[in-house]
Length: 133
Image (cartoon, rainbow, N blue to C red; front, top):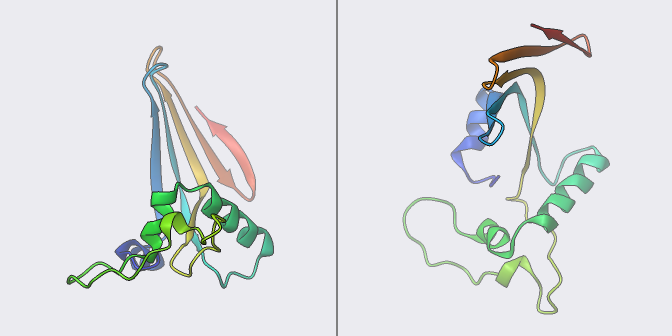
């Protein structure tokens, strides 16, 4: 995500979040709840910084360019953007400070299969996952 977006302040205020994955072919749904964590360039864990750098490299060129755009607000002429987030030799540039990796650390997974109405909830307590029918 972009450090200039409103969601960064929202996550700082309330990191609890949920996401849903729906698979239409199998009629399955996963609802995952947990805490969000933002990983920026000043993070202390080198493993997380490596993951952030890899994620940056995996973005499409147009997606990388957006991190050099002006922040949302009144119109300002755009600065010259590095095409595709690459240098003149075509090599992907290092992630700018505006690029944050967002992680969802799950604490609850709610699974629903609509073909037979099966439902299961898995909860993380004391670093152990347990299933609840």
